[in-house]
Length: 355
Ligand SMILES: *Cc1c(COP(=O)(O)O)cnc(C)c1O
Image (cartoon, rainbow, N blue to C red; front, side, top):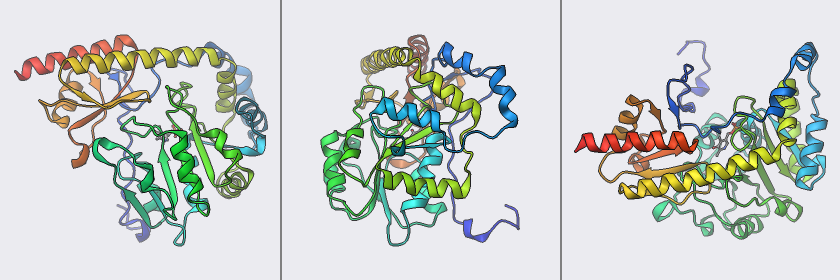
C-alpha cells in the first residue's frame, strides 16, 4: 500500500466482487446477473442520438425516471431516490443515517457490502447471527434500538421473510431506520413497499441489475417517505449530483416500457430454479428454499471450495466463500435452462470422477 494512503483505512478490508472474466469463456453463474440481454427497447434507446448528447450533463434530479418509477409503484416522485447501483444507494444510506449514536445491525450472513460500508465509515455495527438453517428470526430485530439492514430475500441464502414480519421490525424500532434491500424481490418474493405509507422509518431499496438485466448500467433506487429521501438527497448532492449518466437513464426508462419481457424472463428463471434444485436433490445435495435468482446449495460428499474449483476447471463459474460457517456451500446463479443443464452435467462428471 502507498505510504501516502491515509492511516484511517489501515484496518479496512475492501469488498471483493465476484470474478468478472472479460473473455466470456465461462458459463457465468457467479454474480446473480440476468442471463437474458436487455429488451430490444433498451437497445433502441441507447442510440446514437443519446450518445450525441453526452457533451451535456444529465438531469441531476432524474425527473423523468423518478416520475415513471413513482407512477409504477403508486408513490410520489418525492418518494423515489436514484443511485449509481444500489451499492451506492446503500453507501449513501449508511452515511446519512448511521453514526456513533446510531449504530447499525444486519444479519451475520448477508450481503458482503454491509460490513465493508460500516468499517469504511467507522460505524459501530452488530452482526446478528442467523438461526439454524440460515433462518432469519424477526424477533432478533424487534425493539433492537439500532438502525437495521436486511436483504429480503437474503443473499447468499435466498431465504425470505414475510411483509408482516418486516412490519413488526419497522413498527418496533420507531426511532431507527429499517432498510430492506429488495435486490431479489422480483423472482417470486413480496415487496414491503406498501408499508412506506405507514412508517416514515422504512427505506426500501431495489436495483435494475438483476430482474431488469441492467447490471452493466448501474442503477439502483430507493422508495421511502419524503423525510428519508430528502436525507439521501442531501448526501448525494454533497458527493455526486450527476450520479446517473444519460445512457443508463435512457436504458432504464426503456426497461419500464417492456415490463412484460422481464416478467417472462423472471418466470423462466423461477422454473429453472425449481428444475436445478430438483436435479441437485437427486444427486444428494442440500439446497435451501430460494425466492431469488440463485440457489444456495451444498454437496454432502465434497467440500465447497473443491467443488467450486472443479467446476471452474470445467468452465462453470459459481460463487464460494472461505468463511467457515458457509465454506461447504455454493451460491449458484440461475441462468438459462441450457446453462443449468451444463452446470448439472459438470456436477455429475465431477462426482463421478471423485468416485
Ligand atoms: C446485487 C446486490 C446489490 C447490488 O446491486 P447493484 O444495484 O448492482 O449495485 C445490493 N444488494 C444485494 C443484496 C445484492 O445482492
